Length: 313
Image 1 (spheres, rainbow, N blue to C red):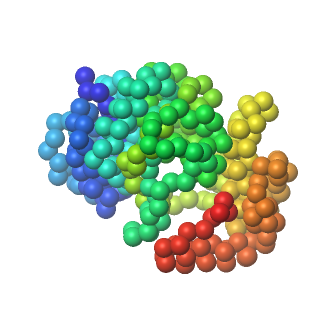
Image 2: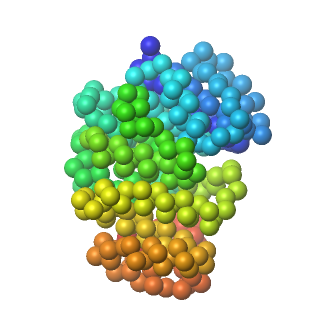
C-alpha cells in the first residue's frame, strides 16, 4: 500500500494537466499512487494524461458532477491511509510529499497537514502566501487556525494532506456547494482536530487561471453566503471563527457591491461585527461599487508591475 494517494479532479485543463502531473511524478518521495477523476472533460485533457506511462496512475471517468463529487470519489478509491489533494492546474515543487510526510511523522494525531505555498498573480508575478501568525523554520501546530487564516488561508487545497479516516469522520466535501467547498472542509477539520503547518514552500497556486466553468455570479454569491451562514451556531461561542467568517462576509460584501447585488450586500453588512475589520476594510465596505471597480483595475495594474497591495496592508 503506498504512503500517499494523490487525488486530482480533472475538468477541461488540457493546457495545464501535463505540467501538473509531471510535478507529481518528479517528487523526491516516490511512494504514492495517483488517482485522476475525469469529471466529464470535453477538451483533450485525457489525451494529455495518456502521454504518461506510469503504473502509479489510475484514471476514473464520471459524468460532470462537480469538483466536490470528483474529489470525494477519488478519496473513496484511494488505497492509502493519507491523502494529498492537487488541482489540475496547480504545481508541486519536488519536495512537496517529502515535507508533507515530515508533518505526519511529527504530529501523527493531527487532522490537517498544511505546507506553505506561493501565489502566482500573473505568469511572472508571484509572492509567498501571507498568514496572520508568526513562524520560523520549524513545523508547528497552528495555535489558532481561524485567526491565522484571515489574510491567506493556512490550508490551501493543493498544499494539504489528511488521513482518509479523519476525512470520512467529518463527512468529506459538501457536494451541495458549487463554490467554497474547500473552505467549508477546512473549518470542519479545524473545529474537530489540530492543524499543523510546515513553513517550507512546496506548491504554486496559479490565481490568474480562471475556472473552466462559466459561473452565474449572483448564484455563486448566494451559495457563498449560505456556506458562511451554515456555521452561525458555532461562531456564537468561538470568537476566532466569528472573526474568520466576518472577513469572509466582508470579502463577499465587496463582491456583491461590485456586482450591484444590493439586497445581499445589506444582509451581509448587518451580520458583520465591524470590530473585526480594519479601517481600510471599513472604508472600502462603504464605498460605491464603481469606486471599488476602479480600485480593482488599479490593483491589477500594480500587480502587473510587481506591486501588491491589499486591504490588509
